[in-house]
Length: 255
View: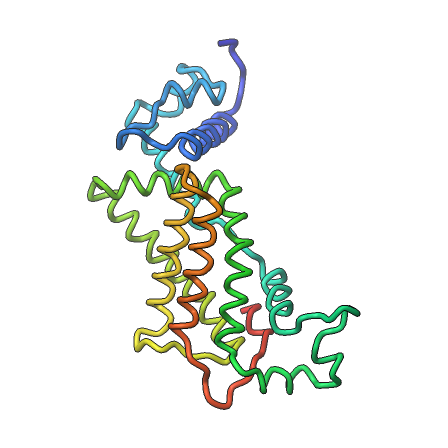
């Protein structure tokens, strides 16, 4: 391999990208092995350069592990896009480009306060958002790498890895819970369960990870996508109820 002069940070970046690409597209056959030689060849990094940064295979494996776990918190839909999708659900346009409220001369607040099913409206929003978010997640090598790595790691976690995975679950659940709390405020809903949105977030997170893991492992994407979206919609329908006297306020989606 021709000698290339790179900074330590450039070498680390190349190897990090190669780790993510490998795990995202090939998975890991046997935990906890991530093939160092294959990764270095893919990154175009010599063994000598690698060993100047990582003292041995254990140090390299620890670095590779960090890259696989880093994708768990990839950003999904932004607030502006979420708001646009919500408006598509709440204010569907007629053939002239007007919302149904505008066409009938009804104010948006009146139209929302008399909506016969805010729960169903929220479920439709979640379905649209989930469909777009799934595209984002499947297009992210970092997220694909995370779900494939997690599937193997959970079978035989070391105490240290189990602690890391538990922390990731807590962080991700809190993030998803915040999303569903904003949805509840925006649609004037309350959680049915005494546990509130915490249990909803846990279920939604499990559905998302399972769907992506199955798709990247070669399962029928169309069927998995349909199951995931319908599963989330059904979750919303069963887990929320309308708060009496509440109305919609989509501005709540901005957090």
